[in-house]
Length: 341
Length: 275
Image 1 (cartoon, rainbow over the protein chains, first blue to last red):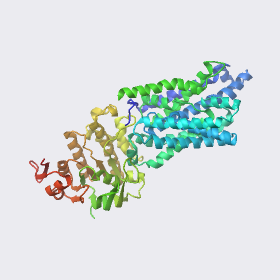
Image 2: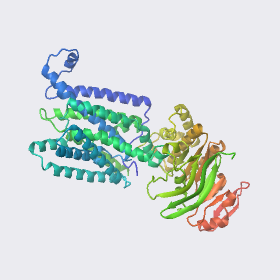
Image 3: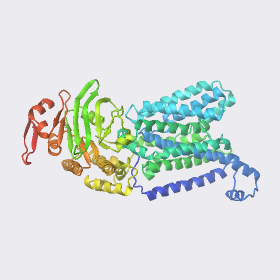
Image 4: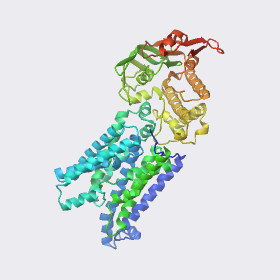
C-alpha cells in the first residue's frame, strides 16, 4: 500500500549533514525574519535595528511599526509555520500516508468550525475560541483517522478529508449567514488565512503553548520511526499503539487548533515542507521533525513577506500565497506517484 | 526445572470468527530449542503467533482472533503485560513489512534495539554489523529499501529482529523469538543461512524460537519440536518422528504423503507429497 508516491528518496544522511542542515535552516530563518520584519509598505533600514538595540531611537514611527506591527506578525507566522510543518510530518507518519496534512485531512476545517462556533456562541474571548478550535480539530482528526485508515490506499484519507472539509465549511457557512457585512469580510479573510491579527498578548500564550506541544511531539521520534514499519511492528518494538495514536492525535490538535483559530486555514505548508526535508535529510524523524518545524517557520515567514510586498500597499491573504506555491507541488506529488505505479 | 522456558502455553484455545482453532493446546518451549509450527492455510498458525506475542488485545487489522488460557513469555504473563514489557522479552518477525518512507537500511536494523535505550549505541552497532554479515546484506546497505527485492527486504527485517533478540538476551538473559514464514521469499542459500542462524541463536541459549514454516523438510531438518495445526483435527505436538507421520500428514493436508529416511542425512526424514 505504502510509498505509492515514492517519496522519501534515500540520502545517506550522516549526523554531520543533518546538523549542518538544521543549522542552515536556523540561519536562513534568522535572515528571513530580518527581511520580513524590515521590508514592506514602510521600509526600515536593518542598521536602524542595531542602533535601537543600543537605545538610540531616531525614528519613533519606524520603531513602533517594527516592534508592535511587524514583529508580532512575523513571529506569529514563524510559530504557525513551525506548528504546521511539524504536525504535517507527524501526521504523515501516523496515518502512514504521504498526503496527510492538517489542511487536506480536515483538521484545519474542524478547528475553524470550532472557532466560528465559539465566536457565534460566546462572542469571542481567546480561551473560548482556542478551546473550541482544539475540540473541532480533535474531532476532525479522529474522524479522518477512523475513515481514512479503513481504506488501504492514500486516496481513502483524501476522500475522508474532502468530506470533512465539505461538512466543516458548509456548517461554517450556516453560522456565517447571521454575520453582518464587516464580520463577513473578516471571516472570509480569516478563512483564506491571515497573520494580520497578531499582537503581543496573543503571542504571549501562543508561543509557549505551541513550543511545548512541538517539543513533546519531537520526543516521540522513535515511535514515529517505528510507525514507518507498520503498526504491528511498532507494537512489537514496545509502543502501546492505541495510546500512542491518541497521544499523537491529541497533541496535533492541541498544537494546530489554537494557531488555526488565530490565523485561519493556511494550507500546504504541512504537506510540502516535510517532503522537502525528507528529500534532503532522509526520513529519520529525529531530524525530520525539527527540520520540518524550522522549514515551516522559514517558508511561512517568507510567504508572509511575499503576501505583503507583491501588491503593496495592499496585501494578499497568506493562505492564497501558500496554496499558489503548494498546489502545484501537490499535483507534482500525485503525478510522481502515478508514474511510479 | 533445569532449563528456562522461553514460551509456556497451557490450555490455550484460539477463537476466530466463531470457530475454535488449536483447541486446549499446551506446550513448553525451552530456551535453546526451535519449535516449528506447521499446518495448512487457515489452521491458525499466525493467530497462535499473534496470541503468544501479545497482539490479541484487538490490535492488527482484519479478522480478530481471541485466545483463552495461559501464555507466558520468558516468565511474563502475556495477557497482562504492557507493550513495553513484552518488547523487552520477545522479538517478532511478521510476514512482510513495507515502509511509508525509506529509512537507511542500517537504521531499520538498529531499530531492533529501540526497546532498550539504555544499551550503548556502540554495542548496538556491533550487533547490527554482525546481523548484516549473517544475512549477506553488505552489498545493499546504500540502497533504498523500496528498491530491494522481497527477499532482500525480508532479510533486512530479519536482521532487525536479530538485533532485537541480541538486545533482549543481553539484558534479560534469553528471549523468545517469533517468526512468521521468514523463508517465504528467500532463495535456497538464504533459507538455509537463516535457519542455521536461528540454530546458532538457539545453541548459544540466547532464545527459544517459535517459527511458522510451510516447508516440512526444512522443519524436519532444523526444528527440535514440531506443532502441526489443522482447521479440522486436533493439534499434534512432538518431535519430528512423532509428528511427521504419513497417516497424520495425509489426513491434515488432504493429499497422500510419504515419509522416508533422508537420502543423505543420518536419522533424517524426507517428506514428499505423492500427487
